[in-house]
Length: 320
Image (cartoon, rainbow, N blue to C red):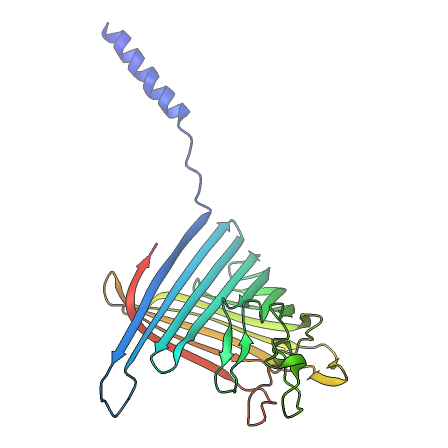
């Protein structure tokens, strides 16, 4: 009887060992974070700042999903941010609006060097206005503009936190959401002058709603936790030189854009996150953009300029 029990036990253990399949390696790693920042001011008979009431709310959503298999690495990131400031005197105005999708596929021949493909999409969620013009003028919106980027090239990864790429690139600029957006009928001002359409602001012909650039792209991406104590930092920079021949776009006999080859456009985004405790965090973001085709700056609103934006907020946050 004992031998029979031992035989059955041994057979059960052997069968369990044979039936158990080895665990598959985890190919995908995913995660994200959500932050909600806010601020409020109120005053009465306060001469230094006579704004009776204001409230600001900004949300940040960062998502990522990476897939590793052998020498192949596929990295995907998304930043979706939106913020509004509401004052009693001026009403609601956007202070943040970003829809930024980024994907990079790499095949590394050695530990640090390989070939791959970089792709990206940048736009915003809702309309933006120039409140300094009278009447206020719409100057942006969803897919107005939108930048779609595609670039094969060499990828260099000196560390797990830093990736550099270089190669040829194509970029499409879309202004497909109401590309004219005139304040006046037909874009003719009361004084007889011509109003710029929203597409013209970004060097796009309103009837075509898109424009293509081709040239050379350099990118740098850095992401590291605990760059300082309790501080995370991530950064992405893109610098593209458009090498297409001189392109003159006209509408009704009027020159809309004169594009010279070799001009370098820059997009640089930075985010610092300070972890106060499990739920409370301080966010600081800084973005810099230079686009030679966006000629709406200066006293005559006819030249490009470096665009900068920063945002500091304290609020609740959760990682997943």
